[in-house]
Image (cartoon, rainbow over all chains, first blue to last red):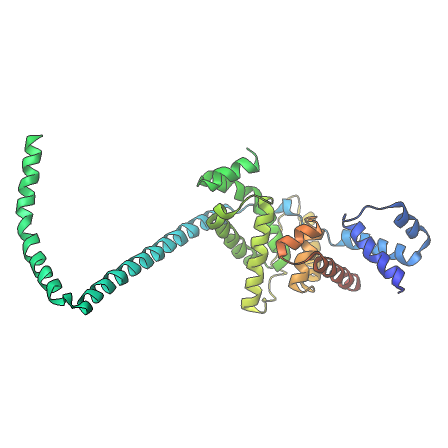
Length: 140
Length: 172
């Protein structure tokens, strides 16, 4: 096949698939070049013989769409859990890091004392808080 | 309601609008994947994955292209991933192909024969080239659009289509 035919056949492919218009020049070439004409006819035949898969005949399976929604909601939950876990881990590491730093600087004893005080006094303040709440409710 | 309005609603989290969009484009996605895989079971799985990805990423879709084009591009990427993972696709299912045509039995047989014949021919093409051929031959996408869908230059799209035509000419 000569270079000219090869070039023309690439053009014909573009014309066949609507990428280029069928110009007069191409049309004239097809009239006198039997090789390109045969190629053009083959292209037409090929397009015709490759038809047959018609999307309109496909039935919509709603279970596929429904399960896609279901799966995506599970995926969204999974992503949210993962995000929460990452946030929790970062905050925990930061707090522990700060605590570690304070202990390293020399506040270890003070931290332990503060913790003991909190452990004793927070439960003791619960009845007081309940009483306050009851009084508030009664006044209403 | 037109596609643009539905898309805007879907982006704000309206499930009904998104569902409508997916129903409207189901046949295109399923049909494209069926031609690509020539395997009904795989097509169903991939269609579900495409829908799922679309649901999860609807907010990222800016609407620069048609919704169906976006779905086709998701489907192409998922199929590429599938091929890379499995390396070879089981050669079942040409016989299992079922495009339903309920007109009459004779019609059904003729249609199935055509689908089987075309399916066999399509399977002869390497998958990346097959994608280009399907998008051009059955969906009339332009070279530019195919390039965007498959993320490759227009020259590659043209040469892949040319390869497919030459291969099919020899086969037919």
